Every structure is written in structure tokens, then in C-alpha cells.
Length: 121
Image (cartoon, rainbow, N blue to C red; front, top):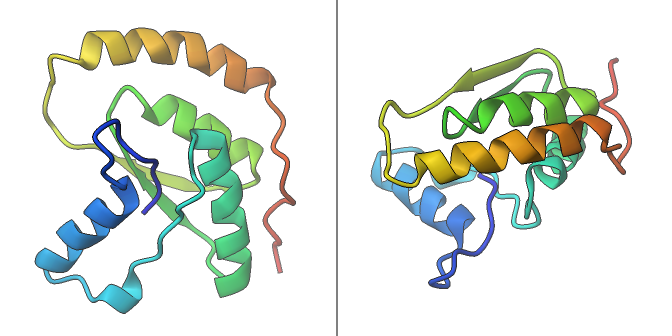
């Protein structure tokens, strides 16, 4: 789980962890990334986790409009292949979020990750 702090003070990572645990997912199988304040940070932090645990694949779950930028950030961090999914609903905030993604994607296109790449052993 990766995310930031919402304007109301809710820690997204803890809220998602609690949700998964209520759905029966064991706590020890949930990994938190409290430093993933943006998509590139999350991708870079995932490289570290994947290297530590020997993981080779990742699944990104986010809103449909955010997945192209997620895929770009994870590829730039050296993570391939990337599996993706999204919840099937539309929110009144989606038009604003889609506009934000149209601006953010080109910025990420030129952005360089700071962390080391995924080790392929």
C-alpha cells in the first residue's frame, strides 16, 4: 500500500491496510510505503522492496486515469512487467483528475528516477 496523507488527515496507506484486513488479508502480507508521496516515489520505493524480497512482478491498482502515469513511472524505475487493475466506477472528481493526468504525464516522461534499478538475478 502506498499513498499520502489526505487533507482530512487520513493516512491512505493505513486506511487501505485496515480495509484489506477487514476483507481477510493477513496483516503480515501487507507492505506499506509511507514515503510514496507521489507516483515516482512509489515506483522507486517498490524497486527497493522488490530487491529486498526477490519479487519479480508488481500489480498496480489505482484509478483508471492514473494507470498510464503509473506504468510510465514503474518502467522508468526498471520494473517490468506491470500488471494493472482499477475499480470500475466514475466519480464527480474524475474530470479534474483526468486533466491533472494530462499535465503530469508529460512531466513524468522527462523525469529521471533517483533510486537504483531493479536487480535481475
